[in-house]
Length: 350
Image (cartoon, rainbow, N blue to C red):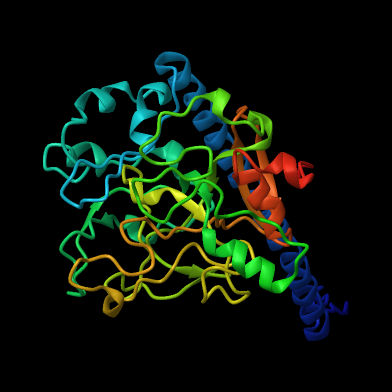
């Protein structure tokens, strides 16, 4: 009689299975950061392209108008206001939107809202969080009500208008070696010209950029507005309680005046870069005029990006550069001012 023996089926033991799972976990742990880095590299490249297009549009405007596209922002709240990025629309293949925009009335006028409430992809950094595409507001009549009414689409870039005069005092108090000359040709009032590339209410030309187009920042990242971010973290999702004054791409208040901040980003005017995207205007900070001191009608944005280690900007010659957030404020200030960098002797690209 023949005997038949059942063949044992090959399989994993429990120990072998656990080893395989552990190996897969290690591989996934190694792969995910690489994927995230690749995605961020792609987003940063897209951001760089956006700034390049803005730089080209800047030159297109200057060639056509023989002046730079300065934001219009008189002191009185009831006057017509317009951001510099509105003037760049025809040179960014957005002529149809430019034709619909009425320059005789404010950016927040009912007739202009169909344009200003429309997001412009070129004005948005892919690395910046969109936060449900929240809209920026018009601070007129805010008066501490705490009620946020968003009406204008946001952007992550701002015209570089100069250096906050207070930074000169802050830097000098820290060390005499830090020379930023923030008070040169500058005033805190909205009607006075500042010492940057695109001061408000001005008719500057390329020839007025005496430091040279390749040494002066025209537009710089200030991402995530009107939400307040500090070191990559959102302060509060409730814009009625915490926001910075700026972010709407059509607003003159979205221009950027460099002030630096404390290391934690809480205090604006300091020796650190890329720690916050702007001063936090808590609802209680507003008085009856709707604008908190010391900014008056000026916006309170700060250079800021969500790229690891720093932010990007476009120079007057159209080239796009990256600034390391561990760089010093005097170097960034020298790049921002149109008439001081040559005296400081720090024109090297960061």
